[in-house]
Image (cartoon, rainbow, N blue to C red; front, side, top):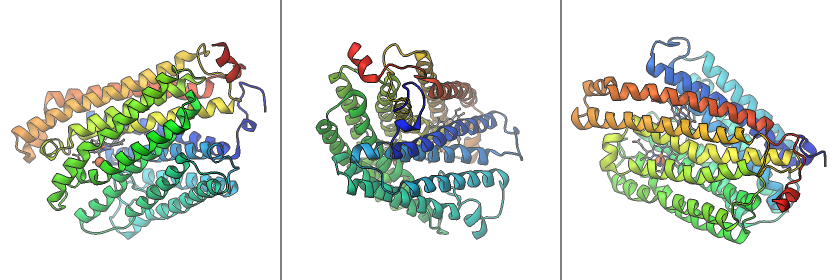
Length: 480
Ligand code: HEM
Ligand code: HEM
Ligand SMILES: [Fe+2]
């Protein structure tokens, strides 16, 4: 074990060293996501900005692809992080896992460069295989899809084999089953049909079933493990909650898929199925808040890593509000008929992805940093604590601010374009010229800059937090 307070890879086990690589790329892509989001936001205000050089369609695509990829990097990193600890066994196939990381990262880099250099082209098989598959959020071309599947199989083998050789627990069992579902669903986004309704039908299998089922279960397992580590919650309790949450999540989320089938040409029964089941989706999210707050309260919030616990709590609430409340608002078909395709969805999209998934990944970055420095104290009296507090505050102010402005714009669109204007072509433009819409877009951009400030402060803090602090976590905890 090396000196406390300095970053040293000997503080980490094999899986954790690999996790740090995944986390590092995740942070880089997070910053990229924000920068491309800002460019797309400026183009809402000044449509001629970078026109023909870096069009809105490209900025938007890179913005949301960077998001999906950094969050997946965060999840993969988190699983590698807890793998040896949870299985009580050395990771199996680490060399292959490392190779997988480099292959995946090279592929991501090439895909993004191609997006930026080849922005326009014919919609044929060559484009599909080499440039862009054209499915929002998962636009990666087919060659990269195949590469991703191979790397994910390696990752899966690492995880499953390590648990087989070590021990199975409630958390690891749920985790491995979830990974089968998560990877399997990706295949549904890889084939291509010429019928747009059928294409959308399958595409939602990936997007909805990922974020509202398998990703939610993934963060459920991450939360269970993290609560044991940060506040010493009992395994029996977190695992019982995990089972309840998973049952509720799948029970409502799988058929909740129907809320994307309202208007794409699927059969009418989806209106009732989607409306009913997706209205139940917030229930497990309430359970998650109760669980996190209850556990933290029982342990009197005592822990040696304040930033990590703060971001875990932010996750519980962000998931509930962003996904649960903001999703519920527009999920009944009677309401969705007016809100569909307005900034209302973008408001929910921002608050949900940030609240549910950015937060918990950031919590894991802080867990990783503490361990990388020999598990030193990061609780009360942490030097430079203003940085993580301001980063957390600015990021929330920025994202909540953007979500509120987008909601105002979406409300105005639903009203002027849909309710009053009857969804005509001219009403569509009328709604976008209305002062509420125009001003909301300016305010969105302002809050975008706040988000950027929070992000940069977060990166600074991730590099600096706990540096040089040589108090071991256990000793300092006993003193406090
Ligand atoms: C963390 C979980 C969630 C994330 C990350 C998420 C994210 C998103 C995103 C990005 C969209 C826009 C998709 C597009 O490009 O068309 C969307 C749409 C939607 N979400 Fe969620 N969501 C989550 C959970 C929920 C929940 C729990 C509900 C319901 C209670 C919900 C209800 C909806 C509805 C109804 C739409 C469709 C809007 C429309 O097309 O009119 N979401 N979601
Ligand atoms: C500087 C901050 C940001 C700005 C200026 C920004 C701006 C934008 C813009 C202009 C779009 C395109 C909307 C459209 O097509 O009409 C977009 C889409 C999106 N952004 Fe951001 N964004 C920012 C940060 C974030 C963050 C932090 C997240 C989540 C973690 C996020 C998630 C999304 C999602 C999910 C979409 C697709 C929404 C949909 O299709 O409904 N963005 N963003
Ligand atoms: Fe959905």
